Amino acid sequence: MAEVLLQVDNLVKNFGGVRATDDLTLDVRAGEVHALIGPNGAGKTTFIGQLMGEIVPDAGAIRFAGSPLGGLDTPARVRLGIARTFQITQLLDEDTALSNVALTIQAQQGHSFRFWKTAAGDASLFGPAQTYLAAAGLAERGNVLVRDLSHGEHKQLELAMALASEPRLLLLDEPMAGLGASESRQMVDSLKRLKGRTAILLVEHDMDAVFALADRISVLVYGKVIATGTPADIQANSQVRVAYLGEGDA
Ligand SMILES: Nc1ncnc2c1ncn2[C@@H]1O[C@H](COP(=O)(O)OP(=O)(O)OP(=O)(O)O)[C@@H](O)[C@H]1O
Image 1 (cartoon, rainbow, N blue to C red):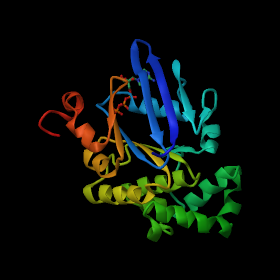
Image 2: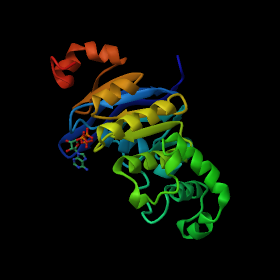
Image 3: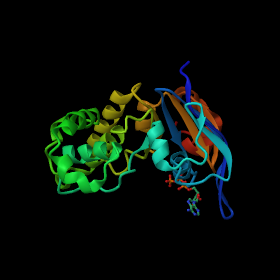
Image 4: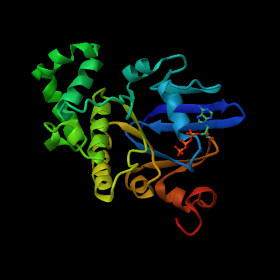
């Protein structure tokens, strides 16, 4: 069995009277796609925020590659090898997809955005940028302006930008949201190609995508993991069927 990359133990987060994360225990193994599913408001986004260091837990522990993450800010966690999509919210609409990825690589290297003009002329960034675009399924779209990309292609570009930090763990918060059927298929194909290269924690409502991609699935209900298992285990779990999948649907 692959090594445990992310180990979360007994995590708790309260917002006033709401316990958004309730004694949450979960692990992600190196290279696996681990889907986290659950009804609206189950606490999935709050959990990702705690993994990235954007939300401070009230109790519990998170270890990544054996080291505790408590007290580390988001950039420090990115340097350790954790990345999420939508981390860099500002796509430059008037620049090409390739330039946007090149800029992300430059930012990873510690340069400030104000040196962008020089970076745009720095051909050494374009080779790697093209590789990340290709990994995200946008090999042919590098020279297209961001404002001319479709919604699905924006999502793929955000994926390429997340890959630019060479993460060992990629956190994806609803990558299929708002995508049409063919765009969803392209995203699933891109994520399938990434399997094994990086571990993925996939928060997703689209069950077709979850069952197409996941090695394991955890089910979150009211901030608590009520089940973890293979897709077949989860589909057969009567507690999950009642709580989430809906009897008769699964
Ligand atoms: N900053 C906050 N202040 C107060 N309550 C919050 C805050 N963030 C989240 N919550 C509450 O915590 C619970 C979990 O919310 P969260 O957004 O993490 O759920 P989710 O599973 O990501 O939902 P969805 O699938 O709809 O995105 C909800 O009851 C939500 O209202």
